[in-house]
Image (cartoon, rainbow, N blue to C red; front, side, top):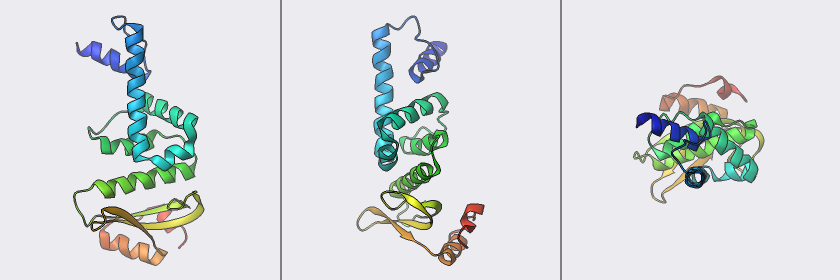
Length: 176
């Protein structure tokens, strides 16, 4: 039974042929449902990323994710991070996807005092995304139940990183 489920899961992800025990029409319906549900869930989590990639780019990214996904977490909210790890896109799209996933993390945390720092080579908080180093503090506004992003100076970013106990990476020194 376990082997049959693995074989079927491989088929659904596009990694193997349809198992002989599954009728072709039924198999295709299941494959389409998996793709449509995954695309819908990720589009909800990463709406600007999906729009930036366009329909054909988004579909290709979903297919790539299905083929490469290892699913380290059983939680739907963690799918965005796993998707980004397989995303093969230009840096601006990767920065945007990371920013949207970080917004989702701050929005869905149970700690109302959650704050996250982020450094990007693109101005991801703007639409459209443009080039330019951006240092951000994301926090949850519990009163209005939304995520706020504040642009920081380099000095503010370094200070908050030490206060929040977040390590600085080599990309954080850009613009110093």
